[in-house]
Length: 333
Image 1 (cartoon, one colour):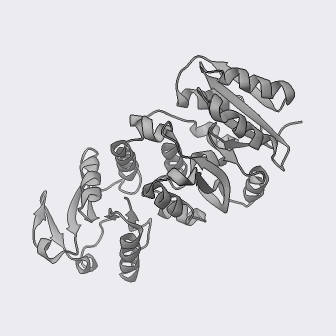
Image 2 (cartoon, rainbow, N blue to C red; image 1 turned 45 degrees about the vertical axis):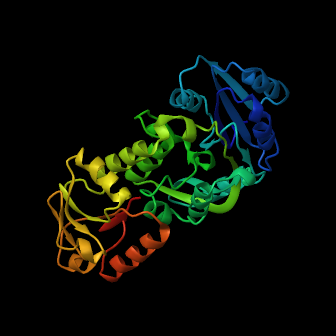
Image 3 (tube, helix red, strand yellow; image 1 turned 45 degrees about the horizontal axis):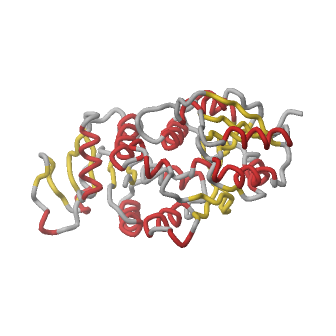
């Protein structure tokens, strides 16, 4: 029987957490799955553990490769996925038993190419405030429109919650650009006109640990995230223009401005609310009050401020002035 969904699971030296992950797959209420486990040259017994699960349940399929890195492992596994839908999973996470069934049902809606879900980070006792805030932000996104609105803040969909149509993923594949491959994929999906939804349920227990790639790899460092955002902003929202209006010039705005300069994009004006900065210039761009935007026409606005509260206020102000989000302005943290 052709499975309804292929679970794409790259693993590398994950023996300590893999069994719990695979048990959560076994417990799925939706039973029409296959799990393609790609062992990326592990040396800690991960491969033997994966093969033990496959020996008792043929829906687990194990692919052993030499160590080549995450992106290669993902593409290797994708080539072996047979179902029309592909669900990403990581070896240190645990999926809710309803996950596959709920997301398959969500993708029956017309127009969606992929769906994610809300998450619960664990273990809670060691969770830092920054990760709690990130979890809260992620779990506030519950529609395809919000995914678009929030796309340049951070990756709006947690990768191991993503379920995507196989033909769409096969056309894009994964790539290594020196920044997070998951964020790169989501921004390419949106840039190609695909809609990415979110199931507003916590369908994944997302493990926080000192060993996670987002903590240990320079690919996931803040400057690489900024470089990723700038590249896609330049190619998509700012395509066809050399200048834009930058709202905010704190640390977040400054970093994004520098990254956009590398793509030939420079602010024509900088919007600030601090009265002491009005009338000054920043790298040749005059500093103006928000009200000045009523007379600055034809230039896209990039809002680059930290904090959900300030962004909400700026969104409300721009909307009141007749600006439309994703068409006339975007928020980019």
